[in-house]
Image (cartoon, rainbow, N blue to C red; front, side):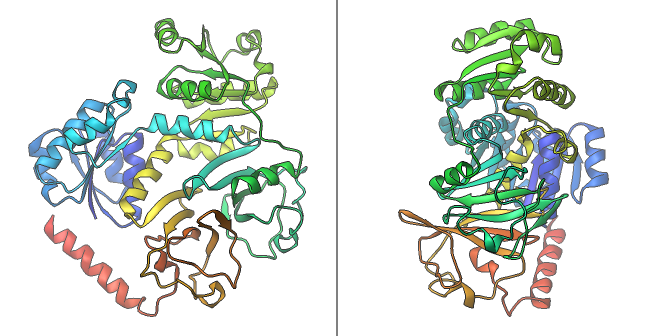
Length: 468
């Protein structure tokens, strides 16, 4: 696809990077020369310095040939105008980042009037992600598949888990039969485990199954899903606004710490059910005076990664039961995993996953990337023309490091075995390592691949280059 990305900030840069890695022809537009230089030097994209609202700039980018235009500048209004202009000039599809809560109530009307094909709101998505994760004790991350019938829970393995030191083939009876450990990350490496694989302390495991099975998995080592009680949030921004509303609906008592007095007054009006306190969330004595140790959940959501990490570490050391922190820099991930912070949220990764799913097409229902894209968890709905229908899985020739982990069928969720078959209408959840899968049939090793496919891909890229 030919894709134009307007705005090369944190979200735009990360998006352009991922799209180019998936072999799309990407053009990046930004009016900041320094930002353009960074993208030009580090990414395999074509860069244009200028205002994405300008028809002249969009025509220079040959927007009439664009399959997709994505506007992710810091201004909601600019993004909407970019998409409106791009659509008028011939862009096939448009996506806009719209973050202001005032627009949230009018998104359906805005999409229709402006002709938007998709709206992304990183802050709302991050708030929903946090609220979802808090429902499960000890979970690093939680994702939903098959219309919420299948859960994926990421956990860090600790010494009190009964699965430590046991091979996966010997776990029968120790974990519910309706869950599966589908993928493991160890020292930054993604592993799709087989029956001989042994779980070790400090591994990160991805457990998939239905809600009852996941609850039973937690219960197996004394963890119980319970109601959220006292929550403290440092930083009053858009994520905090959306999250506080979600937590209130879950019955939580929310206390918000914000250093800016003006913002405190605004939030006091916007969120009458929350307690707003003016203070510095990075000062340990202040947090202690606000009973940080009595918090069931502590969440740091300021605009500075460093402040979020400091606050999170203070909360952890002072006895907060669950600590969540927002970061913007992906390269902090490896460091944070060693600090003992329970959950880390990165809005730009969430946004990128949403857009990549859209770009991959209608065949993919859900998409979740693991460790900077080393592996993906994908959901497909089986169509009547699929090549894998009604054939026992053990007879199918799957690509290397491909695993079908769950199948949601009518009112049941199945952990498939070798003799099981896939039916039309099934929702199939797949783990793929180092494979870019767009369609369910691509899970198979196809005899017509190899040099023939590479030649076709090369001709396609050459054609795209000539039309620019």
